[in-house]
Image (cartoon, rainbow, N blue to C red):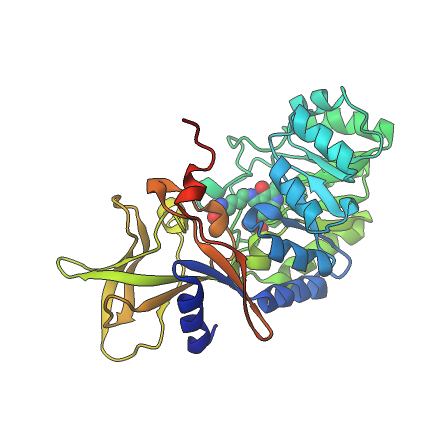
Length: 383
Ligand code: LLP
């Protein structure tokens, strides 16, 4: 956690709402991954949190990147991530993105569709290795918005398409291997057993040196040791190197959202109206995401609150039925486990200003992204 003195100082110096990151937690998560998957290539899913300070820190710790857009590619390169450690994934891969990836000299691509493979034929891709992303056609047992491995989801190629493209790539000597990202917040290990069972015949038939198992590890309690055993057995039997693309697992616990109580309302439910809500952290509204909420420097009698945002929409909420000490206007709350898919999914809904971002340093704090202002909101508007 973060000590109260620092929290008050951040509120005073930078205002609220503000995202606060503790890089030490990211370091611990990298260490855990390196411990359990010692020879694996870690490609951080930039979408989880593209903040430049975090990307730089990951680059310094030898972590690569999984990118899906021009913006993510640019940010990964700017942070100093080696192009050899960048994979272009995702359903987009249009002409502009393909050209940018070739120009940047990245090494890996994960093909998401047969149509993408046809488009790649128009370009010189001789320096690249390709993964084939298989749609594993299974139930990843997670929230429906996060279930990318279901047959009806838009992700990956069918088995038939995978065979066609694998044959091509094998003949060209450019097959990196096969890739499945079955979903996010996966905790049931039978999902990985099923994924590997689907991939085995493909590796046996076409070879490929790498298995890309995607990301999706459940936070906060993924059993990495057990997962590593499954992966090691599989990769050893087939002589494969492991590639993984964790997003949330690396950064979720490093992030905190500091918000101030603006108003208290009592009624059928007691509400705390805070200065952060769905525009700052959309996970509770979009996925029923649960993020622990604690009060800063308050104790005593507890009450049950709806912790709400400041906007005119009933989904504008940070948490429901939250037990907290008696609070009032001006009190501070810290929402934790928001380092992944927090700021990056924030929006200007209701012309909200996106929050500031601060990292904790050895001797204090550092502002790494300024809070937006009215000028930022109007910057691209033309008369
Ligand atoms: N690899 C691929 C191809 C992905 O599409 C994703 C995430 C990842 C890796 C990283 O997944 P992670 O380890 O972070 O679960 N906005 C949602 C999560 C969407 C994830 C999309 N793809 C949320 O807030 O839960």
